[in-house]
Structures are given as structure tokens and as C-alpha cells.
Image (cartoon, rainbow, N blue to C red; front, side, top):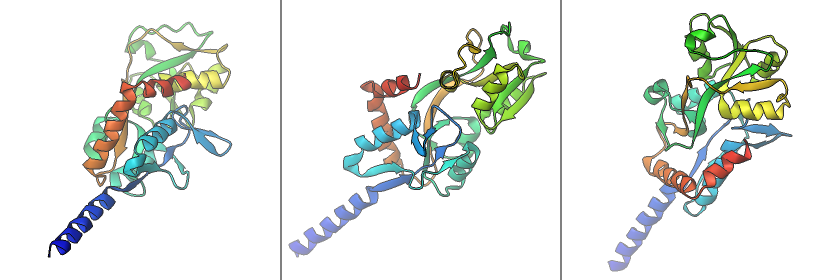
Length: 251
């Protein structure tokens, strides 16, 4: 009888351990360097490095974040998959907007900070004074990003949506638009990688119209136990400086 009882206990423990084993499916975001960078059919970037570090630290618990097909998807579609709990379990590198908090899913602890900022042509004497100083300007934004709604809500701004920030910056360099609005990490990386430092610069002194953090966003079916495990890893990455080390690679 005792032997049967012990066998039953072992079966329960094995089942519990198996239930915690989890491959979490994600997609990469297209056209979003330095979060996700595609180079010769391979991917790198801030969020890829974060995923790799999380996986390394969770190896013993057999929880892993994977993109089995290396899918590279627009952020609007990614958020729809998360909202409907279809195809993917999570996405790394999402802003915590009010709409997403209500309609989409659960968030991790904060990964890293970003600020929305402007780039201008160096020949442009534009000085940001207040939000009204943007009136009458043509501002490039990334299609599908939160920047579109933000700029559309500013009176007098003409918004030009592009499929990539590279397209917006190239338009800025030749004077076809007045400003580009995007987050600071992305603008700095793109200006450097496109060798536009002689033509384009950031507008440094202004109120930040958007500021906050990037997170992992989960669909509603991902267990809170798994989320807590990943949160613990993220906190350890902040504590030992690993998160800052990743960010500095792309600045």
C-alpha cells in the first residue's frame, strides 16, 4: 500500500514538473532596429539579446522563449495575435499603453526605458518651444506605431507614415519632411547605421511627448507562474548590470 502511495506521489510530482515545462512562442517585429535587426537572414538586436539571456538563465527550469519559424511580423499584427491568444504566447519589446492593458494581455516587469524624440535636418533651425511649435510642420512617423496617433492628435501637424524609420530619415536628409518622431534608441541607432550624422541630428531640448518602458507582453493564457519566473530573471539582469550591457551594445 505504501509503495502504491509513493508511486502515486511520484506521478503527481512528475506531472507538475511537466506542466511547468514551457516553450513560449514569439515573433520578431519587422522594421524595428535596434530592437530587432535582420542581417543576412539572421536576427540580432536588443530584444533578441534579452530573449537569449532569459533563456540561458531559465535553462534549468526548461522554460524557453522561441521563434521556431524566425517569423518577422508588423507590430500591429503581433498585438492582434496576443489579444486573440493566437499563434504566439508573448512579444518582447512592447509599450504599456492603456488600450493594451485593457484589451491585450499581461505585462512583465519593465525591461528598459525609452523616450519619444525628434530628429531634424542640421540645416533646419527648428527649436522646440512647446507643442504648438510643431504646428505647420511635416513629421515622419513609423506606420502602425503609437507615434501615428500621437502626431495625428497635434493640431496643424501633417503626418507622413512610412514603412520604416530608415525611409523617414532619408526623406528628412533631403528636406522632404521637417522632423521625424520616434523613440530615442531607434533614432540614434538608425542615424549612425545610415551614416547620416553629418546631415541629421536629434532635437535634444524639448518636453518628451512619450516616455516609459518596454515590456514583455503575454497573451492571457500564459500562466502567472511562468510570468513570475521570467520577471525574476529580468530583475536579476537589472541587478547585475546585464540589461545595461545589452543596451550599450546598440547605442
